[in-house]
Image (cartoon, rainbow, N blue to C red; front, side, top):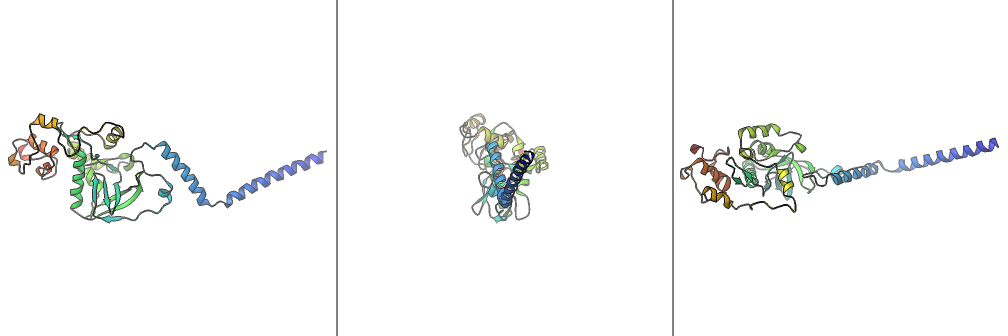
Length: 276
């Protein structure tokens, strides 16, 4: 009886050992790349599910992790908004910064609303036109399948750094890790661009104006009737500061009329300085 028990236990041990070895051989036969892809896909799905409402979230996908990275893109850029351009049909978003949205309005130093999103896009267009072409280096894809990249003008100047330093965009620490904090500190201290008055961070503005939220209180290209009523001014063009009677009037034109930037010849955010 003792020998029979011993033989039975030996048979069971051999069967368990054989099964473990069989499973090990099957796993060894699975390509490592397939295992990696499966694990990466599961991780990407988990992250996207947990953060699907996060604004500006990079596209965490298998094509992004394993796919070929685009070569640098060079060409004459079309401006989409203050942080997005298009070259050869490819949308490119600047890495690490955020600019006001096209429909976004901000307050100037006097508390008057002005279309800061449009102003930011215009500033970017003028800046890029001064030294063409633009070259953008790939960083990642975003969830809208735009390239997120680092872009420079033909003269080597960083587009993102210039936009932040001149107050036309802000550092986005979530993605920049504070890379443009020094430029932002300069802009804030000098009170240029957005920093001349009050504004809502673009990512916060997008959150409050998401689908289903109230539309902006005035469309682009239309001067607020409330501002006209309060000030008595209108956007009848004034070509020269000599045609303007006060500093307040000049600033109103700067922030509310499409031609107002012509009154700010040095680009410091103050129109007709001789009147102020």
